[in-house]
Structure formats: C-alpha cells, structure tokens
Image 1 (cartoon, one colour):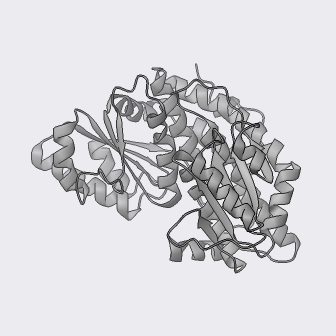
Image 2 (cartoon, helix red, strand yellow):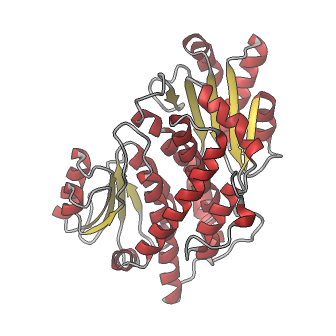
Image 3 (cartoon, rainbow, N blue to C red):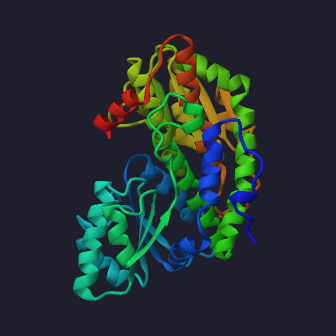
Length: 391
C-alpha cells in the first residue's frame, strides 16, 4: 500500500520548494486520481489544453506517448496549435474527432482554473456533447482550484484532480522556499503526468503512479542538490548576472522543457534589461559574444541542436549542454555540461526531460539570490507584472 505524505520524514532536496512539490503530489487521493487515470488509459485520442508553463508541462509529459511506440495502440495526442487539428475550435473539431476515434479525452492543465483557452475548449466540447448526446468524449483537469469555472464544467463531463500549488502565500523573494509564481503547481503536474504515462505504458494500476512518483522524487532531489552545488551551476549564475542574452533550445519534448525554463529566466533577465529567446524563434536575433545558450538533447546527437551549438560558439558565446550521454557530441562541444544518465529501453517513456526541468528550476532562483547579494532585490510583484503583460 502507498504510504502517503504523513509517513515521509526526510526532505528530498535543499531547495525547499522541491520538497513542497513532492508533498503536494503524494497527497493527492488515490480515489481522486483513479477516474482520470482510467480515462487516460482508455482514450485513443488525447487533446491537450492549457496556457503558458502549464501547457508546456502537459505537452512535455504527453509527448512521451510518441516515444513509446510499443503498446499504445495508436493513441494520438493533439493540441489546437497542431496543423492536423481538425477544426478552428473544439466544437468544430469534435465532429471529426467523433468520426475518427472511439474514446477522446480533453486533458487540461490549469492551476487557477481561469485560463481562457482551456475554458473555451471545455465549453465548446460540452456544447457538442449535449447536442449530440455523445458518450465518446471525456474531460480531465489538473488544477489547484476545484471551485473555478473550468473545474465546474469538467466535473460534469469528466474528472477533476486537485494538486496544490503554493497556496495562499503572499508574494515573496524567498524563492528557494516557495518557487517563483506557479513553479510548485507546474513542476508538480509535470512529474505526476510523466509517471501516469509510464504507468499506463507498463499497464500498472493507479496505485503504482504514486509509488513511481515517490521513487522518482528521491532521485530528482539528489540530482538537484548535486547540480546546484556544482561548479557548473556557479558558472551559469556568474554568466547570467552579467549583461547577456539567453537562448534556449531543443527538439520535441526538450523544446517544451526549454520553454518552461525560458519563461522564468525571462522575468528576471528582462528586469535587468536583457532578454531570453528560443533558439530559431521568429524574433531570435544573432547572438553576441558572451551570450549563453542552453541546449537539451537526450541523445546529444540531434543534428539541428548541434548546429545551434556551433553557431553560438562562432559568436564566442557559452553553451550549456544537457544530455543523457557524457560522450555525446553535444556534451563534447558544450562549454558546460549537465549529464543526466538514464537506463531506458528504446521506444519507452523517458524521465530525462522531467529531470532536466527540475535541475533547471533552481537556476532563476539562484540568479535572483545572487542579485540580492549585490543589492538588487527583485520582488515577486515585479516579476508577476512582467508575466502579466507578456503571457
């Protein structure tokens, strides 16, 4: 039987908000998670919806289905931004999805439950279900607010799982303890969803999801502490506190993790007059000498990622390579390396990407702490303002 948080006696990391994430995930009731888990197992098509980092978290986890080619029985994952999404909105798409698939799950991730995009999709789908009296569709929601408009709609046509975020804490500059804004919720759902995917792939029951989470959090905690205390992390913070732009990139799942990291770094670097770009984004300028590029690739052999690395180095920039193999091309080319080795079989879900997200999550925290030591405190209400006008 799963032990539960009340029996957990030790922390997993010296970064306080990581312990809070672990506690929140393991405090979810098994009876609450079961309906969503069963709907995920049964669906042959999953539509993902969210906003900002919550959407990147959801996409990163669900993209593992594409890697796991064995046993999924043609489970398809779509987002409204995909070229193959069959409609200009969820109501229009539902007609085609109804024809193509037997079981469709609209899976949403929203801490507040007030995000416009998933709420509109849920309302559109509810309209279709009511008009057609259709039982092929289900909705699922991960949220911190069970009283929100999105939770109300979802409860009528599926299941809502509450995963707590930071709670009612006021804005703070104690980022190591509380994370930045939605860190606790967004990273929590990333880990929960990733372990749900792994459990589905291995045909395990819902109880195994919690066991996998508990075991993985211990590993993540060790990885975080080892890297945060490393010379590499110190050098990264040294670079970030200077007048440098930051570039982040990867392919597929790695790109979703890069976006999650980029959002938080953007809040701080913008306050310093610098900027953060996604590699090969539509507004990405040429790098300058001294700029930092963070590249992720599990194999370390992705040709496009290696090209990005070469370009940055030609401009005398600094590259951090995050890869699963210490002898990979990316690791060898990079000025700084974080190696997250993982034993995994081909075509199975990987934990590399979630671990990369957690390892990078203290980076903006450590930058904010370094700036505070220099006399520049960045209160969260300032970062929240940057967030509100850019998201």
